[in-house]
Length: 462
Image (cartoon, rainbow, N blue to C red; front, side, top):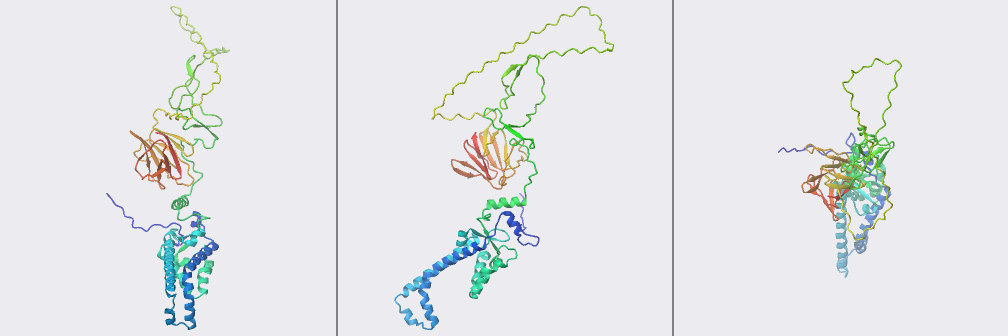
């Protein structure tokens, strides 16, 4: 066994040539900077909650602090007060609640990029380089230390550092001095993409990294017409199962392959054979063709070959009697259908011979499983799988991998296997969803639903 160790640093997407975050990349993902009004409102909410928590201690200790400032504080009188115990309890409770409030704010900001005010205003904080969580120490602790340090200069410091510094951002992303120290960026999750939605972020990064090409024609499949430029009409085929995948034909009609003309008077079929059984349709008799007229003699005929006289005259050729044409059977009148009772069980699905399962995509397309069947945006068989039915699935969000799942019949049933897809697969049975580990087959039952990416299919019959 060979072990490979990747000693390279992880690649960070969205950086320019100088290693700085590119605002255009974040905008292409769908991230939107939080507005200044929303940020101010979030800060006001958080400071209001902090003041309410500290209110008991403020009410209890303000008279004492006022006496100390005026030089009238007497320690003996203070400790002789009858409400001294309540003052100490109020100050201790407020201090404990304030510590808990600050710690919770720091942890939530560092790990989830959200605080109380930001959650109410729909704001999230991310690392400006990686567009992921900002981190506990730099993204939260350093930010709050700089904010509290601004109070060293009363009034001017907080106004300059917290309120006015975002106006000096040369990138016009609303990043102030606190954001520069903590390497953070505030985004609006109500008007743009939520960076903590890992699935949507992964799809957005993949779409930006590998843009779709509209000019590229998809691979031919059973679900799409062969001639994409011609107007197509969906014609369901005559199957015992009700028509699974139909043939597509242009407005001018289907192309007819040249076939050998039937013999005069032979029994021919008036309808094409069934796709499921290969049996011919209702039969009818083909009338014998009229004999071709003899060619007129030329004005200057060429010398003809004269056969020698036969020893005996040839016997006359018997003339075949005409084959009687079957009389058309008169159409029967309308027959009233007898309604089935309400409590009668549903008729079982009858599948053609060789079909192991019938799957119904969320678009209504029905697929017959006779062998290995691959589903994906552009499925392809792996080495050793042999021939497989490839079913391309249209997915604008690119949540479906190129080869996402494989449905394979076995001796005792039909199994589904996740082909190491990006967004995973799951089987929903009886309201319970079970994720499919990559490479591990799971047996399918009638009525199951297989979810792969943002698409799904239902097992109609196994």
